Every structure is written in structure tokens, then in C-alpha cells.
Figure 1 (cartoon, rainbow, N blue to C red):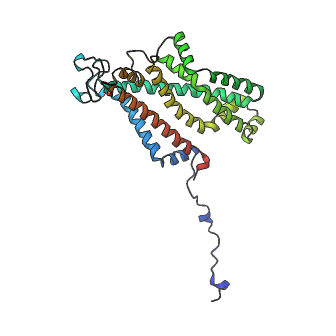
Figure 2: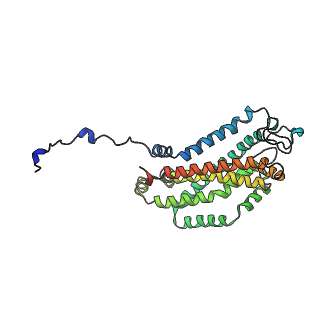
Length: 305
């Protein structure tokens, strides 16, 4: 059977069809959120952190016991006895309420320390990367020197100077953890400062401050956000470690770390006093890390589909 030209019909161009968008236009962060929603593990971790925050704020208000009330007739009671869901500690205080009060302190320290680290790191790293040359060399050698000093030494010195307290822990965490953020921002800035949009802004008369704040930092925001989500669990663990060795928040404040430290004295006889604080520390850190992994994939333009 021969095929001839007459067997085919010329349809021509469908102008309307050719102008239809394959998918709706969306911003960078809208597309990142669209991809993040397909990450079930990240969404589950996000839901857990939201519930954790809600319980930290409202949980103690919905319970009949106070976090500081002592009942010496209910010392070291196991979970479920006397209406105490998580049991009691060595002073007869309800552990369920103290877990949620501790969540307030631990989450506040983690988020506040990470936010301060965020601002110090992006300013320092942005300036070093934008200036380059001798200024960048000097600023990064300072970072290298600070990296060699053990964090615990800096924390102890700050506590000796400022005294123990919540603000001291936050400042200590921020001053010891911003170095990694500065290196990240500096590396990203070095890659972007010779891009066409930066050269165009410089040609139009923009000064260094405007270029850093309006052009360089916004274009590095993806990796910065990912780094921030990993910094929060790091700060929570640092606070827990400091509380465990006796350098954390002072009484009567309670954090997950101080609760775990208090529980380890009766670990063999009342293991729940250590188990529950350690469990929530682990779950919070795991959730933040899973969200960080999800954001890293969602904010990576190379993985856009």
C-alpha cells in the first residue's frame, strides 16, 4: 500500500494551544513548598513540631498539677500512678508538666540561639565574601582561630563573667555556633559577587551595603534556611549537654537537659525520669533534621521538576 501526500490533512498551528502554560507560574518559595508537601517524612516532622510547640505553650495550663508543686508522699512514682502520666521525680513533682515547661525553655534556647547565630553569620560572612582580598583573608583567619577554641571553654568563661542564667546560655550558644554559618554565607557570596546582576547593580551606583543586603544574601537564602534548621537541634543538644554537666539553666527553671540530669541520679530505680526528657530531646532533634533534609531538597533548583 502506497502512502501519498493526499492521505494526510494539514492542521496548521494551533495558536491558542501553543500559548497555554504547561503549569502555573509560581515563585521560588511557592515551588519549594509544592515540592516539600510531597515529602511525607518532612510533613510528619513539621506536624510533630507544631504539636510540640502547642503543648509547650498550653499543655501545663490544661493540667491540674503545677511544675513546681512538691508532694513528698508521691516521690519517685511510676507513670500512671496517682494520675501522673509520666510519673513523678525525687521531690514528688509531676514529670508530665515539667516536660512541657522544659520544652518551652529548650525550644526557646534552640530557636533564639539559632536566630542570633543566623544574623551574626550572614553579616560577617556576607561582608567577608563581598570584600574579598586581604579583608576576606583576615576575617576568615579569625574564624579559623575561633574554631580551634573548644566551645566548652568559651561557655565556662561566659558563665564566669556574666553569671549562670538563660541569657548566658543563649549568648554562649550563638557565639560558638555562628562560625559555620559565616563560612557558608562567605562561600555563597564569593560565587555570586561576579554574577551579572551584581555587576549591573554596581554599575547603577549601588553601594556595598545595598548589594550585600538586597542582592547577595537573598540569593543565598536557600542554603541559609537549611543551615538554620540544622542549627536549632544543635543548640537544643548543646543546652541539654550543658545542663547535664551542671552549667545549664539554674533552678527553679527546668529544661529537658536539666530534667535528664536530675533523673540520672535515680536511673536504676526510676528510669522514666531520664527516659522521657531524653525521648523528647531525641524526637525534637530528629524532627528538625528531617525538616532540614526536606528543605534542602525542596530549595535546590537543580531538583525542580
